[in-house]
Length: 179
Length: 164
Image (cartoon, rainbow over all chains, first blue to last red; front, side, top):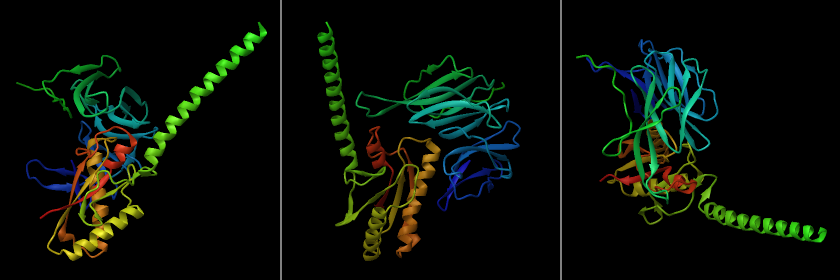
């Protein structure tokens, strides 16, 4: 999880049984949006320690911090895929928000969808679909927001609006449920 | 034949230059309007500003993705510090905000960082940290819901609010 203390935002872990909170990163930069690798050995997060918001990977104890995003623009909200091979992210570039994926070493960046504002991808358990949310203006004057959930296949095709009764944001796809 | 071609070309040129002039005038007006209220991309207007007391504005503004205090911000905060020293019974909450052009969690942290920059400055002018609480709203509470550089500049702010 990400926590702000003394004006600094860092990555922390909390043991769900003992509630013991442990600091993992300790840097004056903004470190937020952590996500574990499926084997629990690594954490990806975004940080502006380079001057701008970029994606990093580290070991689960906070050692071996390595920047992996080097493309144009800002990168945030990294989420590790269920198979462990890809990281989904939100990218901001030239006034647009993109949802994309890259390999865990930062290579093979693919942008799947572009819009005025969208963020927070979450993986389907089979790793083939991403769900995220998108905000659009509610009138022509550009006032007000309407937030809706959307999904897109990893291929970049089949973008779909997920119908919800009210506005919706920040989706999180559950893992497979056993009976 | 030749004459009519020349005339036609002149007409096209004239029309084109008229359109261009019209565009330039319109654009200049828009830029002037923004320039009067922004320096770089920091808001310098008074549209959303409220006052803690006479001559003591309640908020300071920031550049995109920055938490550095501008000269004008430092002046505002010095006035706030002087007012707080005169009113030792009043505590404040510094509310940090970001514009809409960022991811949600990052902007919460950015708002936190901006409010802390203001807090640190008030503390250097003798205000005890016990009297200052910090709260970040990220981009969740814009003061101007427009989607243009001027609206965003008004939203990148730290607002000093009386806590009691």
